Amino acid sequence: PEAVQTFYGICMATFAVAGMLLKPLVGFAADRLGFRTIIITTTFVAAVGNVLYALACPLVSLSLVIFGRVLSGVGAANSTLSFSYIALTVPDSERTAWMSTLGIAFPLGLALGPVFNLFTTSVHMTSGDMEVITPESAPGASVAVLLIALGVASFGTSES
Image 1 (cartoon, rainbow, N blue to C red):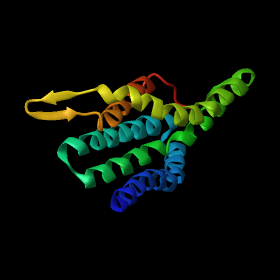
Image 2: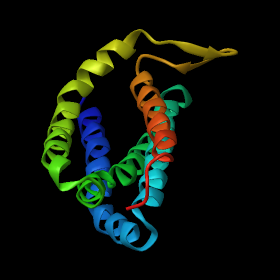
Image 3: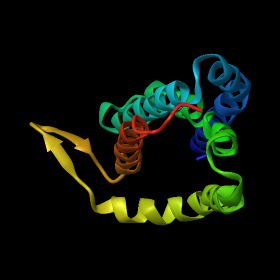
Image 4: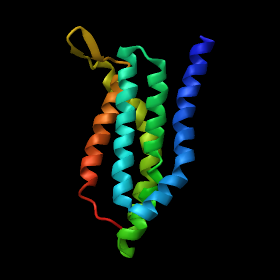
């Protein structure tokens, strides 16, 4: 049990540390290459990370869990760009409302994420003899689908 707790802690930490370390680099890249390019790229990186995280269970790979969490954290480093993007693209008269909405979205996501995971526990998908999506891998797969949709929708955004 102690080894499982330690591994769980490492999984959680890799996501947070990767995001924390990459935020300055993501901001720098957005200044050089544009918000749209970096938001789309990091969103798809996070999607790939979640796919790997979801595949780790059926493939029984602890290293895939860690690598998936690192990529997800790298992708999540784009979260600070949202506020900058709003500041640059939204008219002054609407900016406060958008900033407030975005400000509540992050903690709301943290609170509702576990609830969302409860709904995914009944998901099963097989390919041949292999269970591809299990209750354990469904949260990662579900988030990957949402991130891919967000990434595709981001193609419609304007550059700053």
